[in-house]
Amino acid sequence: MENAERRPYRMGARAAAVEATRARIVRAAADLWTRRWYDDVTLQHIADEAGVSVQTIVNHFDGKDGLADAVADLAAARADVARQAPTGDVPAIVAVLFEEYERQGDANVLWTAQVDRVPAVARAAAHARVQHRAWLERVFADRLPPPGPDREHALALHYAATDVYLWKLWRRDLALPRHAAERAMRDLLTSIDPRKGDDDG
View 1 (cartoon, helix red, strand yellow):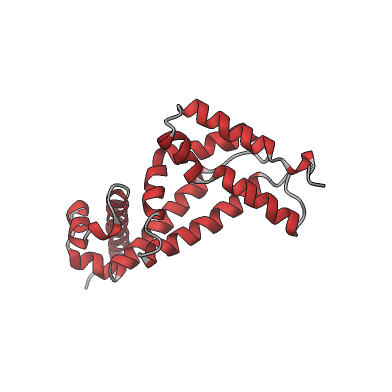
View 2: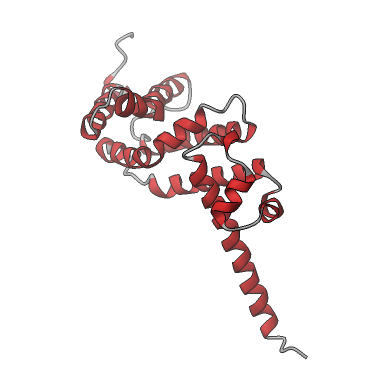
């Protein structure tokens, strides 16, 4: 009879191998979707990139939409880790945000352009919006008004000032160098500080 002590080890090794395969598939899909439209990437493309069969992908994720949800979860987890910045430190906040946008801003813009026709992408975008708002509330906690209309107004301004499309405008459309784009975002965030008062009374 097989030693009972070896069964948990084998089961643990198998679970680790399954998780490694799953992670490899998610990374392969994420890499392809950062460069190509969602509809242009097939499960076969992803399988070839990950070194697995299409059936393996289906077994893990049920299909393309399920895999897209997993990719969105991975992106959200990475953003949570990467976006560490001291509350109220505008230069540090902008630097952290630019590190993310320089790395994956083009992919974010590509995905956002597909929200109206790809449900999985729409779900990912909705989650990203919630995540970004929560991040803004955390890093600008020192300046945001108490809950209410004024807070919502301030959050809307900060959201616009830090949105990936503003990064795209500066870095891609206007071809500003990174240091100039970062300065523009810092200046914009400083100018909308609610603590300075409302000129409209």
